[in-house]
Length: 306
View (cartoon, rainbow, N blue to C red):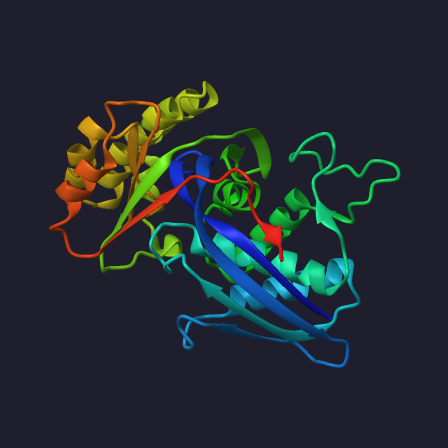
């Protein structure tokens, strides 16, 4: 009873901390999970390859909830390894949860997929060959994240972008997927050395910028994702105490730029068909800052069973 899966990291269009509405987009960095189930095992033991001392409660809870729901409560082991840096605003927790739930489904011999009605359709059609939809698996991972205490909002926006790919807009209070659309952007990520944990974010400060978050939500639901993320980045950099200079430096040469999540990473995107964009110039502007730069792209396929 062994399974493997991979899920995407993501960048932010709208931080959900202010109003409960959030939006995010999948990027081509992955977290991979390997799950081994044993009906005789009591409990679940987890390992995070990049940091053996890291808290494994989230991935262990994901396995336990998945086997309780779709199996017979099997225990076992789970191991994740990742290209997504921890606590950097790039949705490492969502990616780990999604990959772990899908790997557990794989170990249980379940077929995971999307219904013919679309990725947001969780009602199983008669005769469907899908045992678990990706959105059902996503919601289970969100539940695990809440129970493990690694998220304030439940991060359904981050989780859907990681699981489904593309840009997703969600209501995190009801775990409702409001929209999903494919995007094709080049992506530049600057990640400074410090780390910021979502569960430690100043929610009251974020709620103070709710009028700007409402504006961002309107832009996102109108398909104006890059403009939305730029407004989001300025508002939430101020609310969370991050320097807005990197975003300002990127604006002349990027389609959109934002603080990602609760930071500290800043993500700039460029429409490759727009001759006015130049992420090389943005990289030069950011190059003297401490930390790491990563070039990647958006992805629209989402998480996969391997």
